[in-house]
Image (cartoon, rainbow, N blue to C red; front, side, top):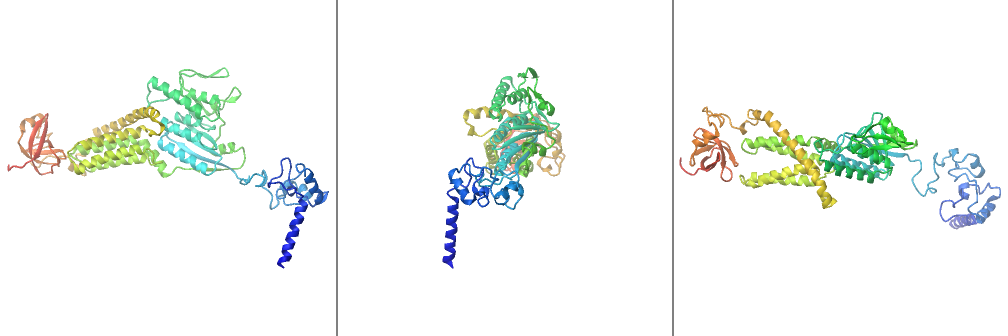
Length: 566
């Protein structure tokens, strides 16, 4: 039986090879110029010339055999010969028929995925001030869209502007995306937002969309020096021309009119923007045809879905929204209030030091500062330099408090490191990967911005101290940190101690008193009813320990542990 089936298979294969007459091409696709192989026409049986005639024709002219093929048998609905042609090809809807609007079988398309795959559109919301966490989120959104094989990426934008460094990062990210990039101005693309929009392939507006007003300003919102403004304007203009994807000089000119008040925009003999002004466009103004083309907009659409439908050309599409994670939202929020948080931290630490040492208030202040730094870098964990500097400063202060009380040098260095870290983080100074010369230019602007924001923090701390400082002395939780009137009626240095001058006259070197607070190294001591500020000459001295004045200079008293018998 085995031999019988083997012989039958051999004769069947031989007959099929003889009938084909070598009409097979070297690949699975039909030869160029042919509208289908004999298999695609499925008419080898019902052909007027028969199978042998069809094979002979294929041998003589393989490129013109079957000039009116209706496609493969699968495309023709699984029919044979003329029946397939009468059925209207793929319209027959057979079980093996290709989907409507298919461009051929998978073999004919070179092994690609089925043509029925919908146009994939990914979109994300860019909302609020442009900052480092926003740039990190955009980078991840673009990477996620690429991983999904998205055909287009839509930026659903609503921003009043932001810092230049993060804006340039977002522009680079969008220009490097492999598919179509689209900005949907919904409703505002102001300042930095306009640069991001220009970096996209297409720009659509919502009915109330507004775009423009992109002049460079300082970190605090004020004007910058004229020379610096010229440099920034020139740099931004070149960056826009380099990144702008369409190569349309009009778009670059419109963007220049938005950020350069000295530039006059004229198109087709019509002055769009005069010198001394900044261009800001509404949706209708951006879509106005000037010189046979819209000024800037690719259309005005009422929704994100309408934009997706427009860019897909009316073909079926799928849209996926890339949402922010909790880390993104937290980082963006903390970044917006970072100067306020740092100001509160400074206030708490100063209040604690004023009470004579480092305690609960300082711990809370350092905790708030740590939260501010970590929160700003939670999105992508970027900017490790600032975190490392801050950690080093905090470690130096902790080192002095734990092992070298009164040494001062570690705490001074630690405080300087923390302030430097604040400037670094607030100014968003880039890493050194860009090269030394470019880094110096970017760092100079970043340091200025960082100092400005740190100044805001100091102002917040000063306002808090002026408004709330007096209440901390009466608070039950922190009352032990500051002195209260003595039980015998003697008040602190503002009462019975009198003025600093009278205290210095009353006290002499060699006088012995008792510490009212821990001296680490500064604190309070009572010298026979005269209470004043003193400083330990070395290390720290615990509360209740007898001390002796060893020096008196410029209203400062230095004491040491008393070793006598007074």
